[in-house]
Image (cartoon, rainbow, N blue to C red; front, side, top):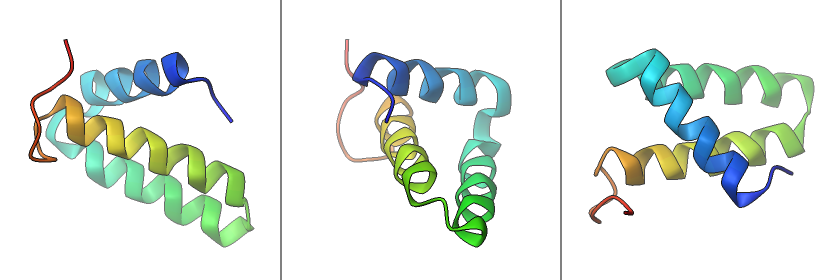
Length: 65
């Protein structure tokens, strides 16, 4: 599992790279990992998607400072 800092860095990078399509990119990653049975990879991307939601303000909370 990635560190907290690494998860935030990944979330930020995915947002920078994919913008509004970030959730679709993450869904593709999770789907591909689920098909191969990579539970740890799925958990990692789930952590990233939670942080993407926070960064983009779509989780009902203000983004962290």
